Each structure stands twice: as C-alpha cells, then as structure tokens.
Image (cartoon, rainbow, N blue to C red; front, side):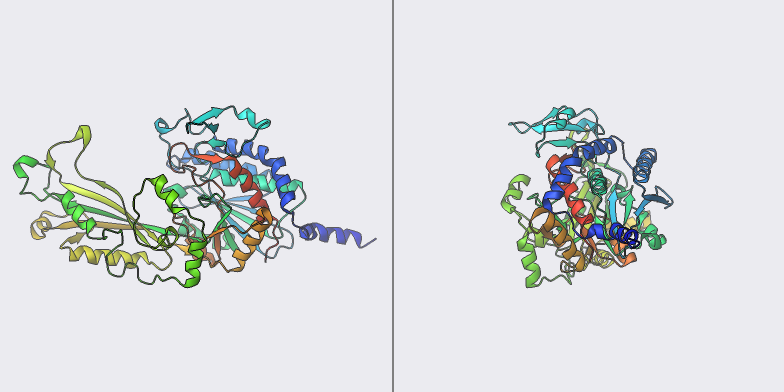
Length: 505
C-alpha cells in the first residue's frame, strides 16, 4: 500500500492521458459546456477593442488577465513600447514539450451606420429568413433551442474573440472531466494585429526565452469554404508600396491647361497598367522566380475541395486572373494588388481640373520564396524603364524641371510568409487529433492567402507553425455584420479539446 500514493501521483501527472476521449466523449463534453462558452463569448465581444483607442484595449487586457488567473494560469504583460502583448502560461507536471498558441484580441474599426444592429459590440442572435435577410432572435432561446446555422453577430465574434472563447471553454470542459494535456501550454495574446502588429517582431526577439516552445498553433482565420475541419500550414506575408505621380504644382483648370499640362492620374494609370498583362500576371522580369511546384504539391492543391464555379458566382466574376491554374495554386504565388487610388474628385465634389498628384497604394502578398526587398528592387527597376525618375519625398522645383516623369516611391514590410511541411510531425499530430474528433482527415491547405504575423515567431524561435481555423468562411470579418455560426462555435470547442487531449509526439 505504501506505493499507492506514488502510483496515484503518477496517474494524475501522466496516466490521465492514457485514454484520450473519443469522438462521442468529445461531443458530450461540448454539449455540456457550449452554452457556458456562449456566455463567455458574449461577455468578451461586449468590450470594444479598436487598437486605435488604447483605453479600449486596456479593458480587454484586464479581462484576459482575470479570466486566466481564475483558472490558475500565470499571466505576464510583455512591454513593447506601446500596447503590450500578454503571455499566458499553464505548466504541466513532467511535461517534456510546450505548445505556443496565438490569438489576437483587437478588432477592426466599426462604422455602425453599415451594421444591421444598433451596437456592433452588443452580440445579437440571428436566424436567416427565407428571403435571405437576417432576423434578430432573443438570446434566451438558446437555453432551450439550437440550430447550427443561427449566428451571433458582433465585432470580433469570428476575428478573433470567438476562437479565444472556444479555447477557454474547451479548457474548462476538459478540466471538469479530469483531462489535461501531456504538454505545457503558452498563449500569446496580440492586441495590435489589426494594426499590423508593428511592435511584435522586435518583441518576439526581446522575449524569445519566455516564448520558447516546440511548436506554434494559430487560432485565427476561417475554415475552408466547404466549412469542413481545416488545417493551414502557412500564410502569405504582406508588404506595401506607396506611389505618387506629379502633374502641375497646383490643380489647374482643365479647359485652360488640358492637352498641355500632363495629368498625373494618366501617368499613374499607365505605370500601373505596365506592371501586369491582361490575364493578371505580373510582367516584371523575375517577379515569380524561384516558385515551382512538384507533382506532389499539385496533388495537394487538387485535394482541396474548392468549388470554383460557386466562388465565381458568389463574387460575380466572369473570368479570373491566370496566375495559377487553380485558386489554390494562385495563392502560392506572390501577388501585386492595387488596393486604392486617388486623384482629383468625383461625384458631388467633382471639379474640372487637372489634379496636382495621383496616389496609388499597392500591397504585395508574399510567399516564402519571395524576398520583399528583392521584389521592391525589381519593381523600381521596372518603373525606371518606363521613363520615371524615382524620389522618396516630394520633388523639388529643380527636379520638376529636370525630369519629365517623376514618381515618389515608399515601401514598408509588415511581415514575411511562413510555411510548415505537411508531412512534419506537427502535421501528423494535428491530423490524428482532428480525425479522432471528426472521423476524417481535415482539409489541408499548403498556404493560406491571407496574412498573419507569425513569421517572427517561426524565425526567432525556430519552430513549426500550423493554423487551426474554426470559424465560418462567410463571417464578414473586417466588414459590417461580422458573425459566428453556432455550428462552428460548437465544432471549434470540440476541435480544441481534441488537440489539447492528443498526446504530443
């Protein structure tokens, strides 16, 4: 009998993991806890979280500190010189490995005039009517009724407070069932992601000892459009170019100076049009260098169950760019996108002028093979070949008189791309967990089209990273009427429980 306490301690520290909960057990635990999780979601969404207003973010940071402290997790603010990061940690006895989870808690700005409810920070339960409109329902109906296609509408329900509420709910459910991971867990909470996480790369280097882990799991972004369970093994990076072309020093009457003073909007249009062909491919030499796909990688693309005719119909597209042979192949190339242009005035503010300047902002989505500095150099070389003189600030009078075509070029790099091999141990471990939860392998995406600030972690910590998206693809993230489908919320809780209860490799 004297060995029984030691045996019990061993079982508590490691033996609880001997039998991971099967699908039926995971579904039962989800059913028991999802309504408590919804109350948690409504609570967190009710806090405004626009990072432009640090006082809003402070409320969110304090809420996170309190919620995790109540569950005996440790919390630490990592100072960045601006809004801090929050590191949350739960060490497991005798754990040999550590998983680092990433969430962001800030949200996009709100223009409430575009929302179909009076307050974007007051969650509203809605059901879709036969005519396609969304009608509000009393939140109390969820106590006795449930429909997977009902949705909670509110800012950050999907991006990214919903997944955080899923994780907390999953943790509570497993804890009550006496189940814990066989690995330690760290969570990094980012409160400036929607602002481009400007201080995160330096902070990761500064605090890399505190952030050290064996792998990283990102809880952000939507599932595949099929809404099947999904794993994404990478994300494109993002960088920006800011272009300004110049006409007369001041706007001029288009009657007096039309046909005489060059129009900067036309110059900008000609310059931008020179960068791509009619099929949307960048014609700048070397832009796609280093990107080739093996037969195995082509099979990865075709295995994703995209319904491209449905996508084109939903987007109203009679044709698509021909960068890749499919949607999946296309997002494995870097992109060059005109995200906005401005010159003169239109509509009620229109005036008959030759504008003084034209402005264009471009973004480049990056893949691991595309070095943004190299691409910037290629683009600048191309601009010079179009006869432009490049400056990095507004031209002087002398420059105006010397160079017939001038363009100001400024650039920035938000963060690089990352990609983890699908056949890595991390990928196999996650597929095993999700297969246990859903009875089938998840949809596997080699790299997602969007950008998330993960490459600083991958580079500084030297660890693999995989995204576990959980929310519905049609969630209107970044837009009015952002929402989270109830079926996705339930399955998200189940997904995270499967990962937390899967024995790490």
